[in-house]
Image (cartoon, rainbow, N blue to C red; front, side, top):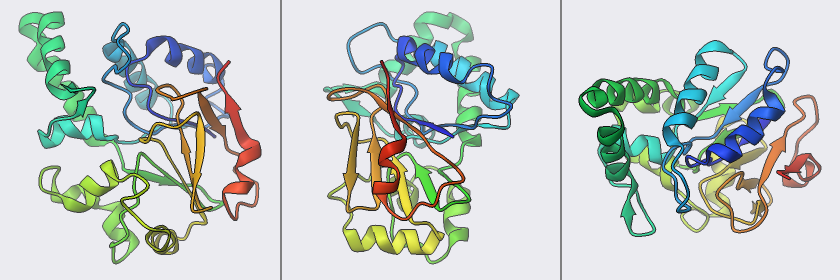
Length: 241
């Protein structure tokens, strides 16, 4: 399973990842951990092109999984998504108006419908839970996480936390409590910019696959390996060259 985080409208990087998995999706699983829209690096904004490609793969291949990130969630919750002093949510909607003219509304609604299809997390059989951010440690059971979007997208505190939590917003005990609840040993997420890869409390790996403070990393997760902590994942990290 390839785990790829936070493309943020970088079409060039997405094409490089695409070259790795394209043609292999009958055997290879892929997880995109959200935030595939909203370009943040002052380059060409390929959000629409990335979004259209992601939608196509998601609907065509059962092995292609897409998770909800806070930048997609912002449009559903009607919340601002500030980065670098710019409300990326508003900027993206303005861009759609300019690009699609009078048809922008129907195009935008189709994107919202797609975002509503996306789950918040995915578990592997060998005990890895993958999400955009998190964890939120106050779930009472797994059903609350599984059904987290049924309460809607606005004013949904558990969902907001799973979209926005970074290291420092939760403790080692919070992470361990969450992992015990979901029956997993390790968590993998994006959301926080690191130099490709970083580890938190020995039980969480953070990846930066496109927007990064250094090199860009993704995870080639062996679904048959025994996973007990982050150290078991380190040999599975790959670098975008």
